[in-house]
Image (cartoon, rainbow, N blue to C red):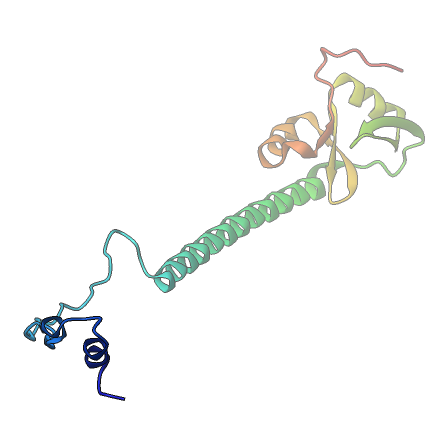
Length: 169
């Protein structure tokens, strides 16, 4: 075989010698390019994921601390109210130990029964006495101590007639 494909085509007569003259491919001169600047991070307001998690963690920690502080304040206020009501009961509660008359009333959606003397029951119906609920027990107190109960814990006042209500027997 004779050389290149161009030579073979000329020998067979399929191509002319003029066409077969080897043309050197035109090479572009090598131009040195300037190095590209380093790619900068996009600063369109987006932050690093680790920073976002750190910020969220700090916010959650602050919220938990605030919630815990509020819970402790409420607990302290509740304990102070309980203590004040307990002291009120110890000093000013009316003795019900000799009660023989049953008095029924509704508290927390249930019907409750309390034993009172006849005089205590009449005083309760007139509004001279009130029934309060402190530490799982019911206590009778005088009318002048009702304001103290309402300032500390209004829900503790279970039964009190102010005179405008009709009493059912």
